[in-house]
Length: 340
Ligand code: FES
Image (cartoon, rainbow, N blue to C red; front, side, top):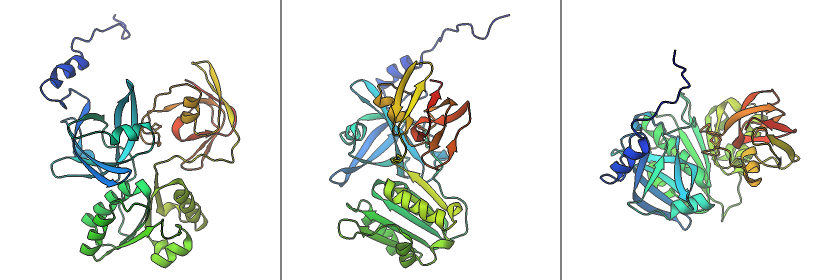
């Protein structure tokens, strides 16, 4: 009987097929999803929109508004991935994402030009509209507008229920497009707050003033950590967390937690972790597998052998032995051992 661990040679090598195909069509690939930059639009001095023409492997039919894709770029020969919300997908199947210049990966992406080719993932993530006959409230700040804009467009296509968007912004990215939607759809109200001119926050007073019935609405929020933490606290105080749906684009660190020793068992390395475990491991020179860095893609999932971690998105504490965790959204609250 043959063992199923027996070495089986690959008769057809995927990378060889892709290498040959690339000579004829820059984005054709056997299994991978490659996409050509088909347009670049400047949204503000440090924010651009890329249009991507994906190859036949991208499952556009699986996309739901609010989801994101991972974009892969090579920097100094090393593959880096980041997650970007899909702003929209055109009738021709072209994907729009917006990229803010912040950090090496985003800087590399903002330097891309029409005709360049990148690798992307399938659409992913659960920040999508939940079926509901209720009115909705959308909250966005900064780059969070990209996912929120997609949700807004989906709501306007599907529902006649009232929807309000409160958008905190310095640069007004997508504000003109959203104003045009507000003019077109009477059941949509747009509250644009220029944070350079007004020092307003997403607190109970502001929500009650702008959207008096906000407590009876489903709320979707995506933005900077300060806004997200404020909104999560408010909904927890009001006992309305069931109605709140959030997407972070920056994983907040709990500054009040002390740094903890973390051991990667198989690598036989130990380091101090002060922020999420992925970032702390990287600071210590380790290179755990990762993708989105936002708790969406599962690429950084691993087994926590022992110790307690806090899920930075939900606040839940996990003290179980041999439990699956995602490094990118976990912060140690005791010494931790990881099977990596
Ligand atoms: S890197 Fe995607 S879930 Fe952690």
